[in-house]
Image (cartoon, rainbow, N blue to C red; front, side, top):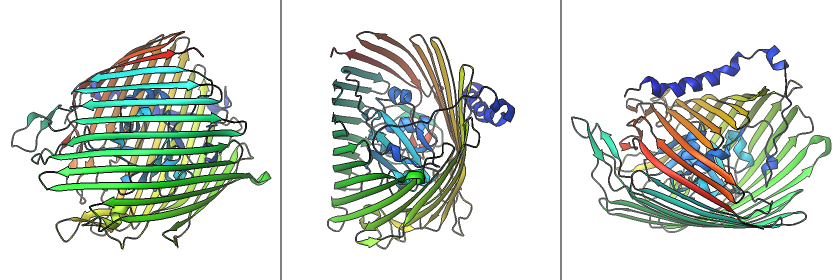
Length: 636
């Protein structure tokens, strides 16, 4: 695979911005310093963020841009999290720092929504438009949100607008390969009552042309077939504000119907998958010291494979109660007590009968936030699983701002986290292993951050060094018979560097921002026969740059993403080459007293690169889309 100079140019820009802060001198920092105010994220549980841990918030402009796309797109273009993607309409899962998909949790307003059978979420059928805030909790930072996320948590949050505005939004999209999407949303209410409604529909043929260089002696172009996707969701949220807090009710129905194409080496197997879910969440929050959330989640996942005569029907029922208390300890800081109880029941033709389990975890977190420049935190969590106490988990963090200007901060943390095997790991027939041990992860991080205002520019930079040691990691591997088996493999060590930088300029009607991120991840199996080999499908190098410019109503953005080489065999003999994808967007936005009009024309994979994220599952070349948005401001 070859790339011309144009392809590499955005990568050079990313490298320059990432290395630029390293050339800063101390005297330069001392001049023209600007005190950076503390960032306060309002809403439930956001005030229990632990000092000493890094949390990344996805830019709202990116969420808005991909509101008709999938969560997989948002995560892959804006973070250093690797998204493993089986192609348009296929499953997409996230992997933090080489920890695997089951080490990643997805939460919705604090409640875990992963499939309890798989222990993971399919990001391809989670639309970015369902929420207005996405936070990334990495490593030990995830323990304050939810337990068991050895890699990290993708937190989806819905926030009410108490300004009393009333808006109606129409948001259609048309694109290449038979893609049509549309969302209608409305927000209506007063300063004390708020209603939010979202309805979404999407369909795509995904009949793109791809390069096949493996199934025949000579490479040729073919059209991807049997790749249709249809998806719908409906969300209704109600908020009521009182003198001391607020109540909320959230209802979310979603369904997706997919034809799943086989690999380009296999004949079409007639694979189809239907996913349905119904989520109901009730929440009460006291502004001062207390919150409680209850949820009921029902899921259906039906998979059919005509060639293999498989008809898999799976039903899940989950009930979760989560509550938290906060108490001020004077000069010692704040004590948070968090309780989370989760009950899961599975009815499937792939287990020997029904299966159910219950878990309760209690976490005690102490934070010292009385010193403006030196803060610390300590969390201890105890899990009661099926009436048996597990070895306690913990996390400890320290945040330091050594200079009075507070332009530089240093983070350090250490944590131990445990992950219970998924229901499929234990009970799937064949291959499940009821004798599996829990997976334990020891995580350590050291981070450096800088925030600086220089004339019209704003600069932010951070770099994090991490090291993870995973004991009894759970993986599915080929067994002695003809099927794969869940097993505890030897220890796995992951280590690496994550760095990101942003530079923005604002002058009159002109604004421009450049965001760049890079991660280096070594994830190595410690088994004697595989020692030093990189885990399968964990890229060592991953990078993103995102340039966004506005002048008046004109908007321009350019995204470049680099995904490094991924090994496709445990012994690292076979691999997929690295690739660089560029996406460009040009749009116009016009605001008036009655509302807002926004139109954008997007070109994805501008240079038409032929590539695969997973072996033998090609992804599209160059594609086009036109998106419109009309917002009407209704009179109060």
